[in-house]
Length: 339
Ligand SMILES: *Cc1c(COP(=O)(O)O)cnc(C)c1O
Image (cartoon, rainbow, N blue to C red; front, side):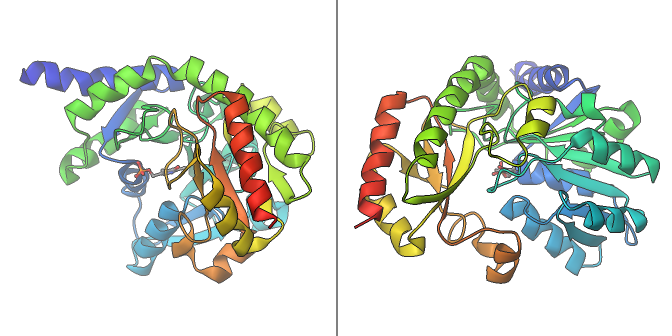
């Protein structure tokens, strides 16, 4: 029994390491624990460079650890060349990347940033939760660590909370593995067992979901009640070319801004029947989130607006429902938003 339980975690870690092209993986209890595990390497004086529009939980975790003096921190718009150069001049120890970013789906060039990090002796960690190794493999692009919330696409069924860190280098893996044991953040065997079941269908799930996401993005883009659609698969998306070059697909996450702001958002959400309002993402069911009041509420209004997160913005995680049903639901929502 004990042997079997231990093996589920090992099997999952080995599988993720293979999928991501790393030397090994450490399974932890949540995506946040995975982010924190990468931070465990740092000492006071070290500088972390993080995206200014990173995942809300990561944003708060970084700020909380900085406030306790555990490292220095600089939030940077990683698509802004001047800001990025200024950050590298300060010789960071760790560069965090999220691409596409949450919730604005901004795309940055992983290889370009990882190369510059290497040149100043910094490690690069990429949070690959939004795409999974089915669509993006950061180690091949020069990343030292890949972070996952396995809660999302890897498990894919919204019934497990878990995380993983995949390392490109054996010595780095050993350091994090020791630290995970010390702090007891390692994941539970039954969660690993469930996640392995989910992982078996990762590729066909995400392939189907991204086809639907593209269709949905086209419908939203053509609608006058929508100000802008952020989906890297659209030609009009500023990161389209980079996404095409470094990703194997555009994924199933998108966001869009309603013309009518918060009032329109409320009417829109109340009218939906199929799409569920929830913080999470990457499951078989389509989930919608309102970043300003949900995932990114903790950022505070100023930081949110600086990051370009408008109050009318909605984030959609496209699931496996029939495309026609989802589009019909969105159209009902849009009609209600316009009233
Ligand atoms: C959800 C998420 C996390 C945190 O994961 P949990 O498993 O919920 O702790 C971290 N990064 C990204 C990009 C996420 O979407």
